[in-house]
Length: 91
Image (cartoon, rainbow, N blue to C red):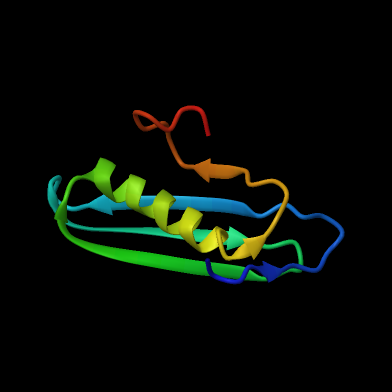
């Protein structure tokens, strides 16, 4: 298991903002996530998908952010998306 990075700060919340898209749909697609870390850092992760749908791109942005967050020691992990996509409404 990879070693987790300990974060410094008064809060141990890491917030993930993610999005993805394809143009046309389906078409060339990518997903991305930004992690806001309590010490003031922001970490960006991206994934190029080739040909995929908008929903696959959205999910891929979320998964990329969650994978990156797995390397950070945190207590809470809110996630933010720009609209509701099927299966992610509980986030």
